[in-house]
Length: 281
Length: 259
Image (cartoon, rainbow over the protein chains, first blue to last red):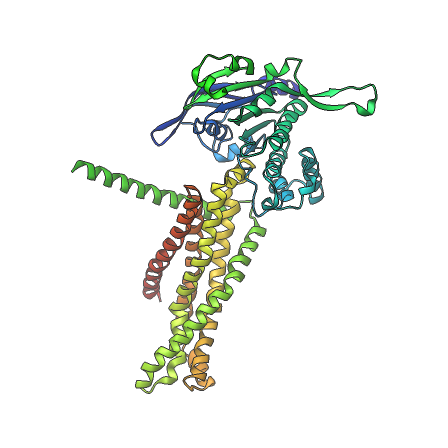
């Protein structure tokens, strides 16, 4: 019975927005936004500054409320949820903020352990084990005792991703996680996002205005490369030849709070819309 | 004619909305005193920051206030041949009025501004939002411990300031005015009544609560980046000082009726 319910639950989209509007004072920052993020899908939201990209993420995680329309997360309509109900939903969602938003007064270990410390369900040793494992996933074990002020931009974003990953969320929201980073560091962040998509099957929304990042996510996959010498067989990032990315990594383009494009990276590049062409150039 | 009246309505609406938000915020913070989790560690940390951290500045202020009181009053008292009452005047003034108010003003300047800037910075760097996404209520985690700490520590600081202020008066009385230590101390201690202590101890918890709630509210309503943090900090100090002086009048008035 439980399995049947779980299976039914798994067929529902991870996130669904239906005709969502959001106003600040009298100005509409989101107009009639509707889209779906399937299980294991990554939706890349592109758009200029002030187009409403970050607001969409805040609505999904309940930091702000929609003025009109519906927001569904894992089959639940959270549009009218109060803070106490949202807390339960947030346990299943991880969010990475633009600048990382690490807690200044806590070490990297305490930042990553924050959710577990608050829940109080594990003892200190168990929490430390989870922290080490999560920091290992983002290649940041060496910074475990550092304070946020001692971290580089890339390190603090990776620490923020590690913090969001604790509790193994099924949905990840990335709010311009590569903004202000050099291309090499941005690449490591993108690889983490790919790793989560391809290895853990995490559904995600990746907000960015950097096309390079978007194309990396759309074109590359983490695959297991088998070599004759078993020791050399390992996971590698390589161009997607299977065509899976075309299905599970889709684009949305926003302009002035409205969706002007939704589809694959190929159809985005082939779009005749002047704004999109200008954005892509 | 219509335009100005429309503007006035908007300003009035804004003021009412602000008052309503502040009341709901205060009410929520107070309710959290009785809701789990209690964040005892954070509360003790704040007690240390607010209490121990403000001890030196509160004591310094009280010491010199007591000393100046002794210097000023002795001049007037000597014209009546009543220099011996210097101790009484210093102790009663400090315990009833100056100790609670001066300590509260010092704490508002040091702690209230600190709370506002800390929470304001956390807000603009999205740490408050991050906390919410991680399933933690920022009011419970950040505001309630600060209110509990400030409400309990301001009375402790006030009692300390009273004692240090009386000692400040003693130093002046002994070294500059030639009043004997036993005369000063006897007059300072004997003339204090139960009513004086009630006046002196009823006010500090109210002042402490006001400083913390105004600091937290100002911090968490910050907008406009780092400039906004500066604005919130100033607003916190000014508002809490004004509230301290106004509430001091009303508490005194109520106590005068009751006692």
